[in-house]
Amino acid sequence: MENTETTRSENLLFFTTIFLAGLCSLIYELLISTTSSYFLGDSVMQFSLTIGVYMAAMGVGSYLTKFLDGNLIEWFVKVELVLGLIGGASVPILYFIFDQMSPMEYQFSMLFITFIIGTLTGFEIPLLVRILKENYPLNSNLAYVLSLDYIGALIATLLFPFLLLPYLGTFRTSIVFGLINIGLGLLVYWYFTKNDKGKRKKRLELMAVGCLTFFLVLATFSGKLLQHWEDSFFTSRVVYSKQTPYQQLVVTKNKKDIRLYINRIIQFSSVDEYRYHETLGMLPLLNAPYKKNVLILGGGEGLLAREVLKFPEVETVTIIDLDEEVFKLAKENIHIKELNGAALLNPKVTTIAHDAMTFLIESEDFYDVIIADLPDPSNDALARLYSTSFYKLVQNHLTPNGVFATQASSPFHTRNAFWCIRETVAASGFKNVYPFHTYVPSFGDWGFVLASNLTLHPQTFETTLATRYLEPDLVKKMFFFAKDMSNPGDLDVNQLDQPNLLHYFLEDWQEFSKEKKN
Image (cartoon, rainbow, N blue to C red; front, top):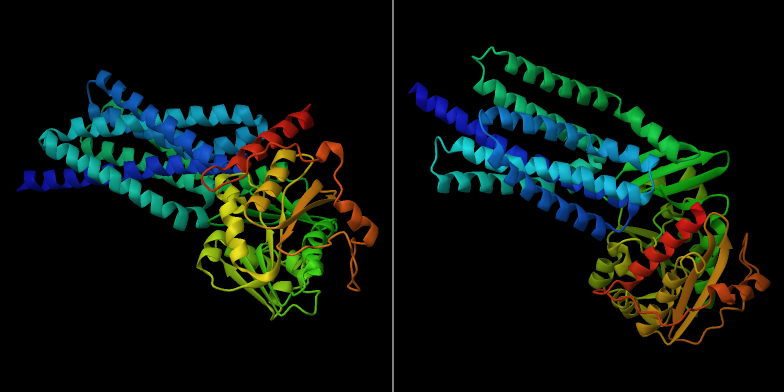
């Protein structure tokens, strides 16, 4: 009876270990991919590189287990301790090296860390299979190990986006799972050596306790460390910071300058944001024969809505933004709320937290004016919102005399990307397309595209509405492009299955970054 109970407890411990090992390993992979996407953009590349290197490294680790002999339990515990230490510290390490290295150096460092974690993960299953063969035949042994490992991976993919990322963030999640990994190894070793009093056991226990202490200290000071890294990146005082399921939001304040950053990329500065938002908000409405119903895609911070609401003819403004927390920030944060004039609390305004493309697919409503104030196409998820498919969906929701406008990145710094957007809007079926640009000090020369099936005269600017920036002579110049910003020609349009815009944007931006650094 005692042997049966002992066997059951051993099996329970091993099966729990297998499950948690699979869970922790995939969490590390997701953490590294997500953190690198935040820092470098292009999430497809970051996730692809991480998965590829991680899987190859697992193969290396699995192969190396053939050289391990002796006490397999002890080897397993050592692997868990090192894996927990490196995996748990991976995000803090990435934060540190991002501030110290160039993007290329960061990329290679990230892949090196991924390779180490993948190699250590590759040790786990072969070791567990060899340990369990004492109680189970090989076919049952593999079935148990692989099924529990895969289930652990499934749970990780569910926990990460819905619970861990929004409530703990990448930094604290890595620490938590490092502690789990180390605690797991220590528990296994303690269980199987509880009657052993050898020196090796004491050394291993001291190593485990040292690792646990390290992570407990790291967890205790995680808030201060994150604040230090944010302060070193942001030149102004951080007054708001939140990790949402989709992105990191940071608001900084320097005297009268309020800035919003998403994933460390500036979205606006209160010093000059009115230049951008008047241009994108007022010009399409001034050129629209009807402006009763307006749809804004993006722009959840409410600054574009502020400009749209200047027009008394506007009866409804619907704002679609992926992140509910951006709406909450715009409605509740004293700094942002003051900037947008409490636009999101206006009874004319409806806010919907939804993906812009999915909303257009599902919606049956029509609008007189649609304005896209979306982030730059720095990754595949954003690039699809500048595709022919997306712009055709926009047309399907415009009234016959409707007008569309979109931000289109910089015609100077990302010249090919800007004109690719112009060509893509034209290729989607709009009869008349009008590219234009203006200077916003925080961003430089910035571009937009206006489109309609009507013939418009956007160079003509007439309004009695209050403006801080727009005036007739200025608007005329917005539609002229100097030689170094003109259409280079021979550009591919951006399609859903061929994100040419993403490649143009990243190439342009990398080239600009090199010139800026030199």
